[in-house]
Length: 575
Image (cartoon, rainbow, N blue to C red; front, side, top):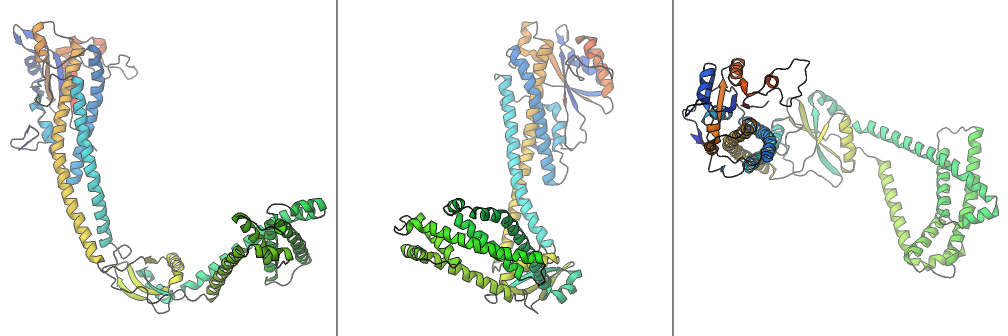
C-alpha cells in the first residue's frame, strides 16, 4: 500500500515514536573522501540510529538579509504545520473512535525522506517554496474543517432525533403515539396532551378538574394589588398637580393663560378621570366605617371635581372658539376638533358652540364615535367573559394514552381561550403540556428524515476519513521539506559558504552534512555528550555552557543551542 509516496511494505504498526534529531555540521575531509557522516555514526552508533538526511545541495541561497528573514518565518511555519498535523490526526481518531496508526507510519518513514523535485523545484526561491507549503497545508486544514463542521451538524441533528426517540414521554415524538385527528371538538374546546410524573399520577387525577380555582384566586388577588398600586400612584400624582392648578384659579390672569394653553384640556380631563376613579374605589371599600380624615378627603375630591369641571368647560370653549365661524380645513385640525368634542361629551358638557363644531366635522365625528362604540362593546364582552369565568378544564375529560418508567401521558379537554392559563397552571404543578399538531404523514416523514440523515452521515464520515488519510501523509512530507529548508538556511548562517568553488554546486553534502538521529530510549543524554565532544570546537564554551538556576541568558541563543544545527521531528498526537 502506497499513500503520497510513502513506502508501507509489510505495514507493521510500530509503536516506536521516539523523536528524531535533524542535525547538520561542517563536512570533514580525509583526502578526497568525506568523513563527517561516517565519524558521527561511528561515535554514537551504539546509542542511536543514524541515517543520512539528503537535502538538495543546490537550493537557492539568496541574499543574507533574505536568508535571515526566512529563518524567522520558517520557525512559525514549522509550528503551524505541526499543529495542523495534530488537528488532522485528532480529527481522524475522533471520527473513527479509535487510535490511528497513520501518524506512527509517517513518523517511522522519516528516514526514507527524499526531496520531491517535481513539486518543489530547486530553481524557486526558498521563500516561494515555504509560502507554497504553508498555503497547501492551510488548504488541507480548511477543507477538513469544513467537512468536519458539516459532519458534526448532521451528527448533532441525528443524535437529537435518537435522544428524543429513546427518551421519556417528555421528549419522545408524539406522532406515533397519538392518532387523534380532531384536536378541536368544538369552536370553544381543544384537546391538549399532558405529561405527568408517575409519582403524581393520583394527585393529577383527583385535582385536575379543580386545579384552576387556586390560580383564579391568585389572579384576582394580583389584579386587586395592581389596582391598588395604580390608585396610590394616581393619588400621588393628584397631590402634586391639583394644588398647583387650583392656586392659579385664584388669579384671573393666570386662569386665563391656563385656559388658552395648547392641550391643557386633556390634562384637566385626565385629572378629573383619576379623581373620580379614586372616589369610586373609596366608595366600594368593604369597610364602610371611615374616620373624619378620610371623610374630609372625600369632600375635597368632590370640590376638586367641581372646580376642575368648570375649568375644563371653559378650556373646551376656548379651544373651539376659532372654529365658531370658520370650519377647520385640514385633516389634523379636524381631528383636533373631534378630540375636543369627544372630551366634552365624555363629561356631559353641552353648548351651542359644541353643536356648531359637530356639524362642521360631522364625517370625522361619526367615524370616531363608531370606533369608541366598538371599543366599548369589546370591553363589555371581555368583562362579561371574565365575570362568567367557566372552568378552564372540562370535568371528566382526562384519559390516559401511554406511560413509561417515569411519566404518564394524558389527553384532556380545555376551554380554548384559557389555554395559556392552563399551561401556566400545569407548569406550577410540574406537569408538562406537549405541543402537538396532527400530521397524517408525520411518522413516515420522520422515518424518512432520519434515514436520509443516517445515509448522509455515513457518506460524510467516509469522505472525511479518506480526506484525512490522504492529507496527513502529504502534510507530513511537506513538513519534512520545511525541516530540510530550515536545516539548509541555518547551516549557511551558522557555518557560512564553502571556500572551495566546486562545493558551491552541492553545498550539501560537500560543505555541510545533514544527518537524522533517533536516540535509543533513555540514551538522549549520552548521545548529546558524545556529540558535544565531537563538535564542541564549533562554538565557544561560553555559548554552549549550561546556566545555573540563578543566571540569566543574555546570549539570545536560548537553552537549546548546540554547536551544530539542531531541529527535532517529533510525533505530536495532541491531547
